[in-house]
Image (tube, rainbow, N blue to C red; front, side, top):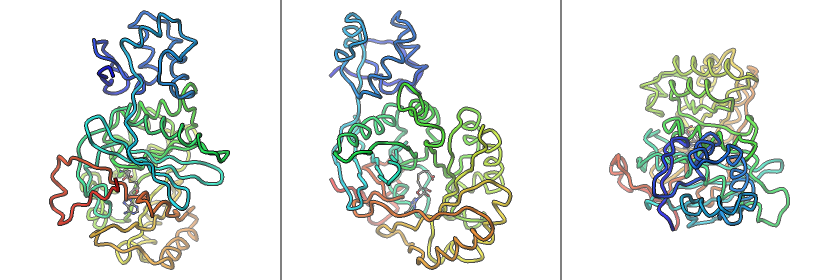
Length: 382
Ligand code: SAH
């Protein structure tokens, strides 16, 4: 195969003798690319449709392009996705793919089918730099950001594989950036990938069907609100700074007062003023008391929020236990009585290690964090 270079943020394309991976270019990036080839801007939408809607990777099959252009693209471009090395199916229908990146790192993507939708959970980084104390991805340390092509490739591959299933109605209707990594620390590549997800010539997902989940990178929440109209989920997990500092170390940098203010600004900027989702992992005896629930009510007072209670998914040596169901429901009903829309997230795909916080891939850790733990868990079953 031709050596491929990837545009660093889906836009900045330099034509060099090596091939450009068109999978990672959003529409503006493709328009620039075709302009550099002396082609008209509409080629961008045509090629986007071939790649993302028809799933075609070979330029000779893109029959609405002139033969000359097809030949030229064959010389200077590729449509290249990481290789799928594991395709695991859970008893509950959840499907997990392990993808091998060109540099040998592995990442994971998870498809969660429900009656009325199919949600794809996408990774944004190789590992994660944040080190939240209850998350197994964080334990592995961090290697690097994913390129736009590597992020959108997860949607590209999953869309085709899911449609190949015999059962009707199987498709990717929603994307959540809740896989490995902190999406807002890979801002430009994530924004370009989201633009491709929402582009009518690609996946055409509406703003209510694409969610970025963040541990609370305050300046990036502000930038995101300026650029995109989409759903935001914030991993809250604690109602006060003392507790949150210990669970989500990023809180030391962006404490709750600043985080909540940025969430309010985000809501103001959205056309629909839609709700922010707060994720709250339920840890037995840590953050799940009645007192915590009441503190949480005071924290989000007056904000349009959806509270998502996530039963903790245990992993080896985590040091935490899942809150008993009755505590989760007690906690949820206190919030609900205060008028806060609250849902308990159903755990899916546990048997294939595909549940929240269980995605580990295989990360060549550069942060050396995994050494802190006696048994580093590269728990992926290859
Ligand atoms: N870095 C982003 C997105 C990745 S994690 C973020 O922090 O939001 C997606 C969600 O799963 C987050 O809310 C995260 O806190 C939660 N999570 C992580 N580990 C978990 C575990 N072991 N059990 C349940 N939820 C977990």
